[in-house]
Structure formats: structure tokens, C-alpha cells
Image 1 (cartoon, rainbow, N blue to C red):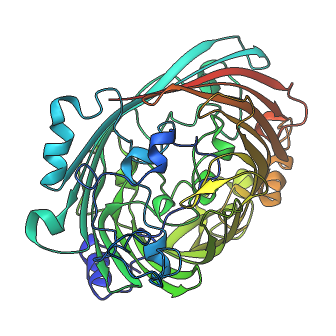
Image 2: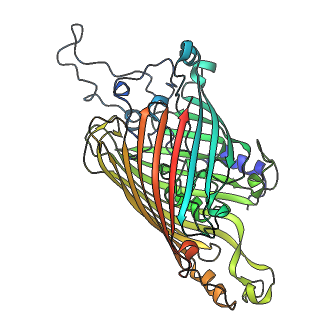
Image 3: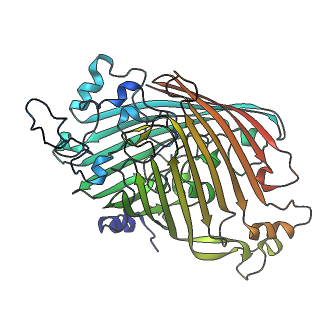
Length: 497
């Protein structure tokens, strides 16, 4: 078992604790389509070009180009080079678990151009989520919570001559109130996903990536598994449909954004859109404390080791998609949710829980564009569908299974740029062993499963502002069948500077 941060970093340096195609574009069929200007090649100066091939494919045949010279689409380019990471100017602004793009001030007085020429990309954003429950809960409340984040990405090729190297730093501040708590909704999953993990300021990212050749990339530093494995967007306001799903079930040791820990990953592109990756991340409960800011060098209880295999289909065919399966194992001990040290029910004896050595789970993620158009691996118009499934071990996981699915439709209203309709339904299951413990306490409601649904319509009236009204419905909140259903009216908004 890994008991110290030093031990984990030693594992990373050996190349065994590193994962995710950081230089391969993550499919996000729910992201608003970039403005028309973004369809043309992005300028080199304000963006980080360390993820691009050293030699760009030549343009179409011209007066000085042989007539039989292949066009860019005909030339062979390594798979991961065809699909580089989303450029900053094309990133969705409302996804609260990714770095923000430039926004309101754009290239004010050529500041970003000047910084970009020297290898620096900077960003800032405030994402707000408001919610009101007209039905359900102990009381009716209106709450607002939000996240302010500042990010800087450094192209080490421009700064230090290290080609293919990138340094990322992000600071987040979470603030506000949570409707699930304030209104007594009793839900398993928060109705405002951006709340939580300590309403505090913290270093969320402080990592270094290095591309090695055409198919390998290594990432080490302060990061989190949800940024590298089981990656899914955070466009919905209900947490059931936001971020890496394992973190929604076993968040006591799989930490999603904005929590960071020591860790890393190794990604290998095996061609034709297929990749493999493995990683390791420190499991350290001290990272969850409100007084945490940069890093702790003690308190680790083990390492989370995820693996993932996937296939990504990009291009301009109108059928963007990704398919991935993964598994994880944690070397940290976990409390049995039912049995004590003598293998009798904890709720009866009151003794310390039985310690289980190792925790684990599996997951699958699917995203597929069905109709419409795409450009450079991004869905621009039409219908796309998604499904996420996660199963955690039943010995230590109170919520052991989550299944969600839904759709995104872009271009619902003609002539309106960047609009997206999102629909999702999901089920979060309470482990039957936890329900067995409920039955042993007289008068305690027995938990089963919580069902959630959300519909939103997202508008981007200007490139730096996203507005997203939504309606949520939670059936059997907390997995308790006798509880009344909860309805939530929400507004998600994001402003980038």
C-alpha cells in the first residue's frame, strides 16, 4: 500500500502512475458549437501550439504546389495529431470541470496575443447555478452557488525550448449555498453540481504534460482522476449527469474537480482512434479539508489506480463519437458498510467497521452524434446521444451503481448560434447491503434508488456568456420511496473574462 506522497511520486517517475489522452481531443457532443469564425484555423499566437505537429500539413494546391500534391485530408498524420486538444477559443464556457476559455475582454489591447507569443494562455470565469424547489423538500428555498476560477497554461516549447511540454495551473474558489441542504431535499445527488468539496480557495491544477513521439504522453503533478478517466462534460446542473461518474458514487476516494491530489497518467495512442491509458493518484482525505490550498505531503492512505481503453471517432463526417471502458482499484482500506470487526451488523453492535483491503469498480461511457454536421471533431448541429454506467464494489460503497443516459440537440432554433437542448435521465442505486442495515433499525426508511431527470436549453448570446435555464425532477429522493418527489427550477450561467 502506498502510504506517502513520496512513494506515489516515485511510482509516477517509473512511468506506472500516469493516464488519459491529454493531447487527444475529448469528445463533448453537448458543447455549444463554436462561433462561425472558429471554423477557420485558430491563430497561433494566442493559443498553446505544443499539441500540434511540428510540421503542419500544407494547404490546398496553389500556383507553387504540384497539381498532384495531396491535400491535407489525404496526407497521413498520426491519429492524435489529427485531433489535438480543444483550442482555448473553442472550449465550452459552462463546463465547470474544465479550464475556461478567453471571453469578455478577448484580446484586449493585444494582451493575449502578446502573452501567447511568449507561451502563456490565461483565463478567468465565474459560473453560477441558481435553484428553487416549488415542490418537495422540507421547505421552499432559492439558493445560488458558484465557482470562480483562474487558469494559466504555459507552452514550455516557447518558454524553455521543451517541445511538446505544457504546464497548467488553475485556482478555484467555490462559494454560495446548496439547495439540497438548505431546503432539506434529502437527495443522493446534488441539484447544483458546482457546490461542494469545501466552499474555499484551492489549487485545482498544477501539472506538467510531456508529449513523447507521436503516440505517448505523460502527465504528473496536482491533478485528479476525473480529468483523465471516465471523462464526461458538466453541462447539466444535476450532479447525476456531471463529470466523471465514479466520483459521484465513491467520492470519498475518487476525487473529481476541484479537488486535486498528487498523481499522473500515461497515455498510448495505438492508432485508428484507439488508445490505452493507466494512471495512479494519491488517496489522501486531508485534500478534502477546507483549509487546504496547494498540497499536503503527508496523510496519504493509498493510491487509486485506474485503467481505460477507448475508441474515438472525430473528423467532419457528422458522426463524432467516443466509446470507452475502464476499471479502477484503490489500495486504501475501506469501511465495510454493513459488518463490524466481528462480522456482525454495525448498526446493532456499534463497534468499529470491518476493514476491507482494496476498493474497486468498472465503468463505460458512450457518446455518439446521430445527425447533423461536425467540424474538426466537434459536433456543430444535430442530435447526439450519451450513456454512462458505473458499478462500484458492494463491500464498501453505499451508492454502488449509477446509470444515466440522454441526448443533446444543437441548432433547434434556426439562425440562433450556439443553442443546445439537453435531456437526461438517470438512476443512482443504494447498495442492498446498506438497505439491509436500514431494515435492522426499527422505524428507519429503507433506501432503494433515486431517479433524476433534467431538461435544459442553453443559449450563448455573446461568445463570453452562456445562459441555461433548466427543470429537474427527482423521484424517490435519497432512494426513499415514501418521500415526495422534488421539482427544481434552475438557471446555470457562465461568464468568461
